Length: 309
Length: 295
Image (tube, rainbow over all chains, first blue to last red; front, side, top):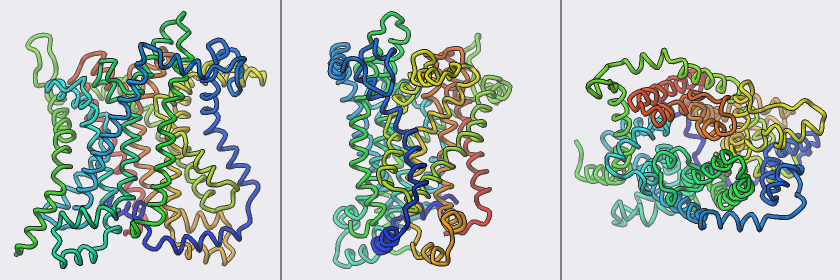
């Protein structure tokens, strides 16, 4: 089964802090390689240059956009004018899109993490009739492409009159089979059976143990699941594209794509290009911040394990 | 012989999994079953929806648009996935070896594209690829090379592979890097003291140890390749002739459902797609299981 093979990937290392320190000590004594440093930083250019282009282009007006060198500033610095245009476009619909995106991604991430944590914890810490079968079904679901489900989900939602509502985007995003898998692996190591047994001896009920003891130990794993469901919903394009048609409900991804299509089709209406680019640039800033901030949590979670909480 | 305490624990466990499986049943199983049901019907000019058995599936296997889409996906699996995962593995090993300067910054910067929404990434690369005004055009002109049209019929698939690679190398690198960090350091310290080179160490100690993580990245890449949708959907605006309706199977399912309004055939394609992914994933799993150490 897949489980058996994947376990060590996400499991918190059992004695990480000690070997980590030793490893650092070894690394310090190591010879640095100039060639490897050069290769790595040249590779970084490939990943970073398109983003530098995006920033530079967000500072240009339309004529500079197509006439000046892509990796440097244009004749005028138009970043703030462009940002004004972004928020002025169609009476400030951009702010609305951004708010929608935040709400969809936030609610979906919180909900999916809650469901996945409870289920993963139960699979890791309890034996019950049908546990193997239910877990196997969950694992099988990881392989099903979500987009293959989107079309029938759309049809079901439209007969329930749920399309073109925020629920149409949020409800399908609450299911994270991979989150359940990850939390099961994480809970198996992070919550010691002896601790649960001690709490039981003290007379705590099972739900109370979960709330007061286990949840804190599961936190680093939960942050990981939350991060990935948040990013997945924030970046989702297919689902909102088919589910929503009112402009006021759109997330940034669908809104920006529509704006881009309008400016491409418009021909003469070139004025939009720099607005779209500035809007695209703005849209990645919150995610990069959330990502870097949470990633630190997540890496600590992986490195030091859940033992300390 | 279940005791009262055990029964109580069973109930508690069911209580924990109930919320997930309630949502799972309505948002996952129900649409899947509905999709399967729909795929056995077809809309006839006379009499509306009629049960047609496997007709939609037979049609898919004779449909050049669908088959060419699968062919493009196969090409992506054979060309793009190995390049992407090879790069991710190389970067992860290089960072883990601790021999490059500023490796913390390198790790972060390579990972950064993963935080960029797919829509923004495609939009951005669309501008970069522009032959006359894009950055690639500016660079080839400056070097005195003939202008290359990255959005032409011949090159567009490779241009899309480049976008996917750019976006996901960092993600895969992080998975592999986390796995490398959890290898007990005693293992390779011993090898290093014995005088093993970094290459040797990577090949005989580290890579075998992170096999499960490599497997995970392969499976995710297989699933991802079959799901490619954003790239053709957005690039078709600026390269209408290079991207046919069936460019990728997923894009085709979307077009069949929402442009051609043939829900039943779209359901069959979506179902087939899931089936093909399962088979490919299973083959990958089998081939990785050789000499596999079980945990």
